Length: 115
Image 1: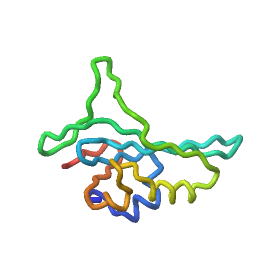
Image 2: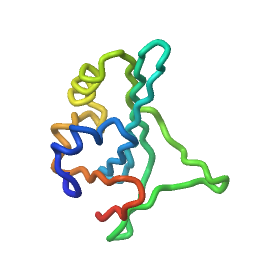
Image 3: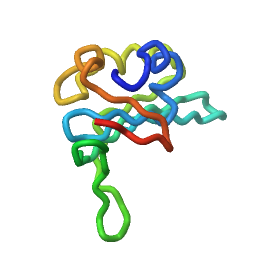
């Protein structure tokens, strides 16, 4: 990852509304927890992004909505199990997180996303 340290991403970033940019796509990682059941739902959604040579921009339709697809979803009560499965899953165009980590850009909400 170019914008952040991998250790920081793996510590908290991967499940806290993380935005990953890779090869013209935004991957949005998010986890929610049902406190009554203890079940954590972790999803990764993907949509097209454009780079103007310096910054990435997401495509938004005329009604202000992003056309996205869910490329990964997992439910479990153990966050560490979810993390391990996320890291091993081939969700980035058939590649795992470990295979794309040096190409991907991770940025937190509110930051400018440099290409």
